Image (tube, rainbow, N blue to C red; front, side):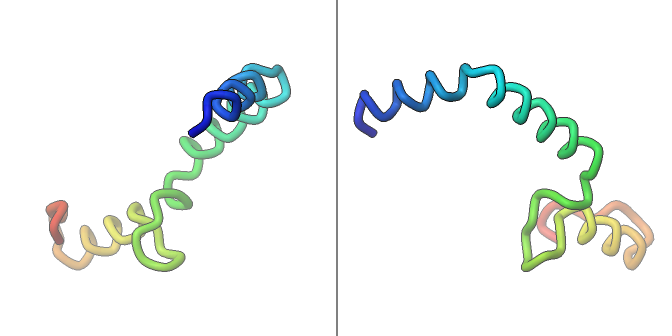
Length: 64
């Protein structure tokens, strides 16, 4: 990436509005775990994990 592009992004990320939106996004991600970390279409990793846990009656391994 060109240095001027990178510096422009850094300046933008340092602005108050960007920081505020970033904090809101972080809170939303941690509050709604089932809606992030997509692995297959629109079904999240957390949803797959819960389904497998129920089906297997144990915690699934990562490979499962």
